[in-house]
Amino acid sequence: MKKIAMEYRVPYADTDQMGVVYYGNYLTLFERARNELMRACGYTYKQCEAEGWMLPVVHAEVDYRRPAKYDDLLEVTAWCRAHKGVRLEIACEVRRKGEEDLLVSGYTRHCFVSTETFHPIPPPEHFISIIDQ
Amino acid sequence: MKKIAMEYRVPYADTDQMGVVYYGNYLTLFERARNELMRACGYTYKQCEAEGWMLPVVHAEVDYRRPAKYDDLLEVTAWCRAHKGVRLEIACEVRRKGEEDLLVSGYTRHCFVSTETFHPIPPPEHFISIIDQ
Amino acid sequence: MKKIAMEYRVPYADTDQMGVVYYGNYLTLFERARNELMRACGYTYKQCEAEGWMLPVVHAEVDYRRPAKYDDLLEVTAWCRAHKGVRLEIACEVRRKGEEDLLVSGYTRHCFVSTETFHPIPPPEHFISIIDQ
Amino acid sequence: MKKIAMEYRVPYADTDQMGVVYYGNYLTLFERARNELMRACGYTYKQCEAEGWMLPVVHAEVDYRRPAKYDDLLEVTAWCRAHKGVRLEIACEVRRKGEEDLLVSGYTRHCFVSTETFHPIPPPEHFISIIDQ
Image 1 (tube, each protein chain N blue to C red):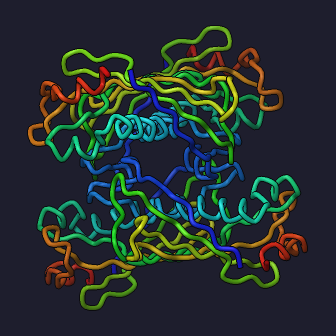
Image 2: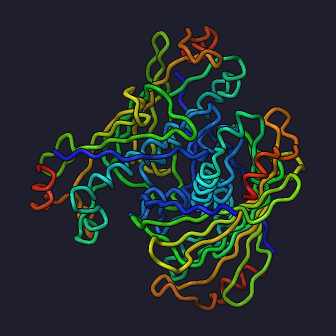
C-alpha cells in the first residue's frame, strides 16, 4: 500500500510558550500529509470534492512522545492503514528529518460522504483500487 | 456610531515560544470583535451572507505596542471608523481588561461583495442606516 | 468531581471550506475548557507553571459526530475523568448551547512534568485534593 | 539585496467557509517566507535568538487582491525593503506558482530587541552586512 513522506519546516506560528509545537497543530500536519498521500495516488482530495464526495474526519487519535521545535525540518509519513465500507483510516508519523526517533504518531478515521447530501456513500471503486495498489 | 467591547481569554494556543500572543492571531481577534459589533447592531454577519452579500477584507493594518500573554483577560473594542461607497473600515483596539495601556490596535478595510458573483455591490441601505446610528 | 461549562462563539477563522469548524480547532477548544476547569478549581494553569510544573498532552482522542458552524454559540463542558500517578485525563464535550445533541467529544491525557527538567514528577498533593473535591 | 521565493501548498486548515484562505493566515505565510529569507542569508532566526536578539513585529500591513484557494501551490517572495537603526522592514508577495497575478502583498516592520531585556538594541553589524549584500 502506498506510503508517502513529506517535509515540513516548523514556523514560529506553530510553537507555544512551552517552546514546542502546540498539540493541536499536529492535526493540520496530518492533513498536509493526507493531501500528499492522495496526490501521490494520482487523485487529489480537490478532485474528490469535484466528483461529489468528501472524507470528513469522524475520529482522531494522537500520541505525543517528544516535542517538535521551531525551525525543525520534520518528515511526516502517511499511509492508509485500513478501509472497510464507508470508513477509511490514515496513519501518520512525525520525525525530525534524518532521525529515527518518533516524535508524534496517530491516525484519523474518515467517512465517505456525498458533498450534496452530507450522507455516507460507498467509496468510488476506482478510488479503492488506487488505495489498494 | 456604535462601539462595542468584548472579552477574550488568551489560550496557550495563541502564544508562541517568545511567551506572547503570536502576531497573526490578532487578526482572528479583530474578526471576533467585528462579529460582536455587527451583532450589537442587530444584524449579524451570518445574516449578511444569508441575504447575499459579504464583506471580505481587502486591507489590514496592525500596530503591536505591548504583548498580550497567556491567560490574560483582554478587552477588544471595535467600531466603524469610515464607510464610503462599497468600502467600510472597522477599527479595533486590544487592552488588558481594566487597564488603559493599549496593547495592539489596527483596522481592516472591507468591500461589499455579492456572494454569487464575488463582485462589488452597493451596501444595503438598511445596513448603512444601522452603521450610522 | 468538578465539572465546568463554558461558552464559545465560533469565528469565521475556525471554519473551513466545507462550511464547518475545522477538525483540528477542537483541540484548542478543549484547551480553553481545561483552562476554565482549572480556574474553577481555584488553581489556574498559569499558577501551575509558576510553581514549577506543567501538564503537557501525551495523548488526545476526538470523536466528531456533528459539525459546529460559523457563529454557533457552543457550550463546552470539561471534567477530570481519571488520574493516577503522574497521569491525568480531562474529558470534553461540545454542544450548541441549549441543545442536547452532542457535536464533538473527546479527552486529553496529560503528564505531570517539571518545568525545569521536563521529567515526570509526582502531582502536587494540594492539586490532587482539589481535583478530587 | 537578497530576495527569496518559497513554495507553499494550501491545506484545508487555511481555508474558511468562503472557500478561500482566511485573511489572518497570510501573516503566518509571511513569517515562513521571512524564515527562508534569513536562512538564504546564511543566518537563521533561530541563530539570532541563540545570540541574544529577536525581531518582534511592531507593525504589519496586508493587501488582499485575489483569494488563494485550497490545494493552490503558492509562491511567496520576500526581501528586506528597508532598515534603519533598530528597525527593519520585510516585504512579501504571494502568487500562484507560475502565474503573474499578485494575490496578496504586504510587509512587516520589526524591531531589534534583546532576548533578555526585551529592550531595543542596535542590530549586530555582521547581520546588517549580510542584509545589505
